[in-house]
Length: 397
Image (cartoon, rainbow, N blue to C red; front, top):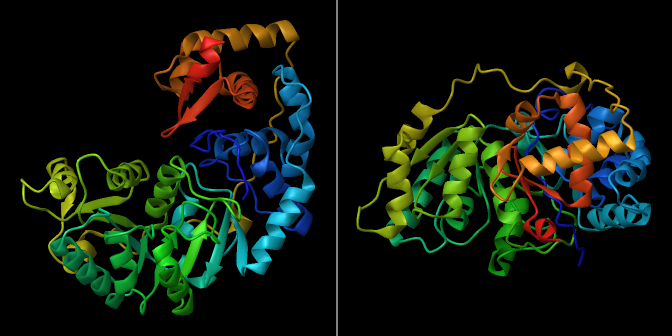
């Protein structure tokens, strides 16, 4: 089993949304992308920042030891080449395709979110990722009415030409996939695409591929899902889709995380109402109270979808290049002083990066490299929504 570092893999608006990197064009470039992404404490945000500062994955890999040394981490080494070669070999053996952000096969809706995965592993039929999709999500312990509603909506969306996206979980997710097998469905996994969770959906996953659908994940091959992977998976479910429909969910549930992600990503959020006394309907009723579209039929979903003429992500030849901004040269004393100022401003409660930069009276080109160094040491953690906080364990040391 592959074990990944606990470095955060969350949003960084500085580079990922405004200046997405050009996709790799050679096999060496693809290996370098994967090595950088799999390096210790390099998550999505740090990946894009390093690409922005150094211009290419290979250059970022060469700079990483020095960046870590400047942050006080000695003997730092990027992900070994052999680890990535083995991952790519495992992918080939499992029939998985590596899809990098900016490539024509990368899901166009997903490409536009701020924390889009730099690399996806895909099993199944790549063209389905380019079709318009709607996410159907909901409770694992769904009621009979909830299951019936998910079945009706999934089939109706498929008949209308939409792909149904969901998370392959028990309950509503499983029903959403089953009801859209014949028309097209995409399952986003919290672990590797070769690790089926829950295990009872192993046959369903195989049927998704057989029927022309796809399984996708940003996690390494062989990765067993752990708790923190599921919120990360949810942002991909919502990012793939034009809209997220919550069929049944408690007031505090993963489905509401998906709905919040959808709002942050500019997606339409919809919900099926339920009885006020049924706790499985609490989350949906809250969403409707707060402005989500009320869903009774498939037609309600189709009417609320954004118009098709809305522009999609441009193909990679037209994507803007990343600015080759070099990290500001600082003396060790200046770097230590800036680190101390950042750590003094942060605490266990998350703070927006933009707010931190304003509080420090600095600018992104000065503060961002220092944040990268502190992320590599594990002192600063990234939270969903572009927020920063201190590692509480580091604080006690």
